[in-house]
Length: 286
Image (cartoon, rainbow, N blue to C red; front, top):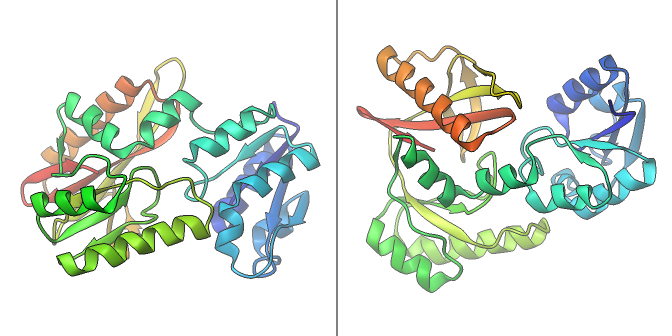
């Protein structure tokens, strides 16, 4: 068991992680900015450290400073929560190099599940449908050609990200260049290693349904009831509910089975979320 865990997140998830760490008998350490220094999670923690001023979001993406803090305070583990650095392979590797445990998937699994084009291939292998999308694009010329092939409207997505980060809806060709430049500027601003993107056909009036899945190293799996997360703003969830009010329960059962097959194929250990976009009578891996 760990003696001190640094929680690299904010808000509700930070408070929940602090509570869990303390219940397990370890010290819970957090960091904060000047804008969230009095939040509930900070006040609950055994140790709290300042990390940056101004815009709080940037501090929670600053992997170098977070790793330095973990080393300085003697943390033997870091819990990333969700979003931010939870699926950042470079962050996990940097911690491992310093003998600090990243509480999440191992590096090999993380490298696979954070590569979205690769995950589409894995999904198809277990029988899932996927939305028409491009290959990995490293420059604008390739991106523009792929957009012409797929057709508008479409969604620009980072090859590796989580929680809708960096996703942009593009309705027409004239928006493509500015959206791509904006993505690159944001990556630079938040010191993200993500530079490559891909594009995917945008499905209007679709539902977003996902299945939380827990799996241990022995292959025991628990698939929790589906979560409806269709109400979003800029690809960020505003309201979630479970079970989903979606009436086709046969399709829901089928998607739960496909989720099980995918997690088993990946030999994933931990908590995952398998997401689908439902449009008409079709459900696509997301």
